[in-house]
Length: 321
Image 1 (tube, rainbow, N blue to C red):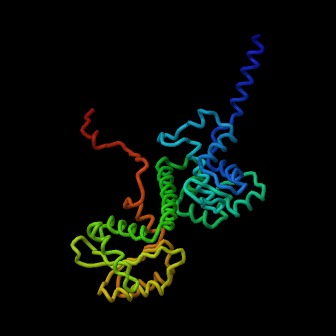
Image 2 (cartoon, rainbow, N blue to C red):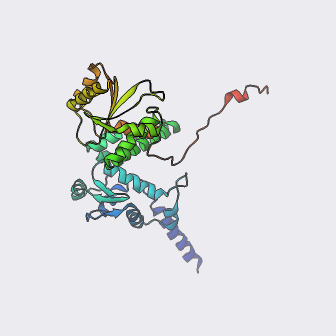
Image 3 (spheres, one colour):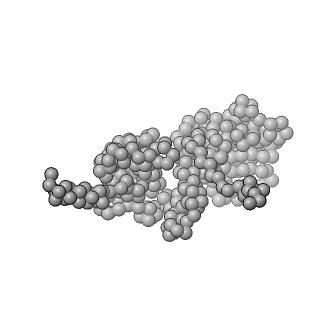
């Protein structure tokens, strides 16, 4: 091949390389993901990830590129986060495990013929605003990169991951059977140090059925005091009447302390009521329950562990050089 042709070929290759799109970030995946779901059918996350990789023209090496942890590909991770954020905004749903479907709100967004969907756009949806509002990641991300320390970035990312896990946990708990929810409550309380052994607590909870009391467990391993338990796997808000009925039921057991758990929320009147009565009643809503599950390792598994080390100045104190 003539030298001129070789040079032209090299120039062409250089142009192609310079024009090549890198692996899109998760925000760049949002609109294409929603467009792939436009027909209203159910698709697995694996299928849409492959389709998006095709759409972005990713090479085989780019499709296989892994996160630093080596446990997931970059494109899979970014599509998964795009899915999570769109779901938080209500633009898509997950009718089954690993399956996604566009929502009516998502179709309405596509009708607007937008050029891009990103976090700024999603903030108009209250459910998304509430999600990102639980962490300062968005605020940190908006600062100039040079003002954000690696520790700030790491801690904010951790909090976002934890918030997403709590939401997934609560959604899963709401879909459980009443019997499974009952066992879950027992495991959480035992993990927190109540109820004695798991076997003892399991026998005590769910057998009372008396006046709104789901069970009675030991406050400590010695059984010096008891706790009345009521667990409500509800969608609606638990109001003062339900809490007041629970408090009244405790009288039949001469119990001074109780725990009321729900997968939903408690009304302001319910929270104010327990502050005014003599009996000590702790109200645990769905969000708090999910956080307790994470904290005490119930229903969750460790995906990976990062150990952050720092310089030990004490080690070098004996250096006389």
